[in-house]
Image 1 (cartoon, protein in one colour):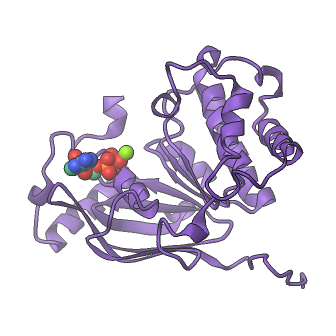
Image 2 (tube, helix red, strand yellow):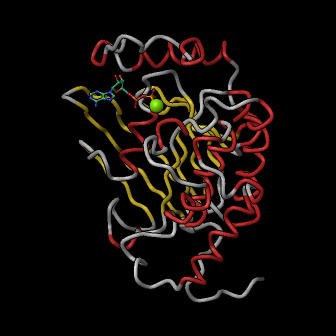
Length: 275
Ligand SMILES: Nc1ncnc2c1ncn2[C@@H]1O[C@H](COP(=O)(O)OP(=O)(O)O)[C@@H](O)[C@H]1O
Ligand SMILES: [Mg+2]
């Protein structure tokens, strides 16, 4: 048995707990009765059709959106608690998440990850440099670290953003569609990197993707969301598309609506067709 070091978290520690969560946006109920928890070291894929509330869920976990009902608990604290500073990392689509008008190198971007409200004046220059070096090395961008981010491929850009989250030493990393706009090869190596982060670095990952095949191969567990959770289980047992269609049909019967309560233009399309 491994000795329990003070300050170290045990393997089966629950990092995220969501209970009876409902979320409204502009008066519409977007998420309803969400219940799940995530343990340390898990790699969870969050999937669902466009408009099903995946990003809304992530934003609620981060504390950007408020719950209408129910609760979110991270490391035993509510979102936005001071105790969570530096623990949670957020990675969104590369295109949406990078400054476009300022010139900045990969290394500088990653360095930004070492700055937060808690450590601003505490980390030494050397400590910061070490973290940045390690993060850049982990994502394999050593060779291009002094290159302007405007001159990167989609895959490199996504890696740079992940390196920024790594430099912040966040333990729980939330990724929203990080695979969009990157080629197949970069996609596979990115998934491999994320998998390694879970296994070797003890990170916990919750990743949104509409690339079912890709995420199913990598994530240990899948959650299918469509206003509420319609599947939550190990990836091997994730239903195929036909079963999913039935699952969705059943759901619509069960909650007695045909989703008219949050009827939005692209709700019934699959993201794949739109992008
Ligand atoms: N700012 C907003 N105000 C009101 N409704 C919103 C807002 N943003 C998104 N929505 C709606 O919330 C639903 C879920 O959106 P989102 O969480 O972005 O879905 P996903 O990430 O699964 O594609 C959609 O019906 C969308 O139209
Ligand atoms: Mg989204």
